[in-house]
Image 1: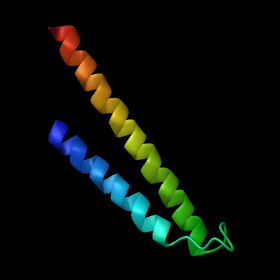
Image 2: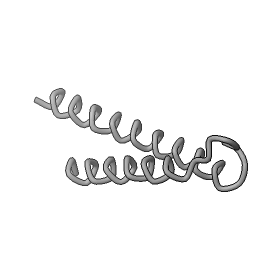
Image 3: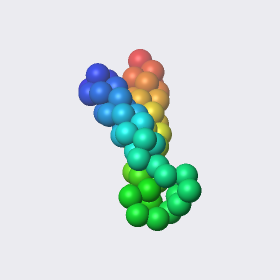
Length: 65
């Protein structure tokens, strides 16, 4: 399970990097750039949530012992 979470975290980080290349800083909320901004936000949210999941799994394993 831990390896799967790390793979998902890597994919979300790749999503952030990919969408960062699609940004146009002149018009940040127009056209494809707005889609990239929302993609970056979604990638960050998934990365944070997966990090929280990893921490909760570590806590749960320590509580069981």
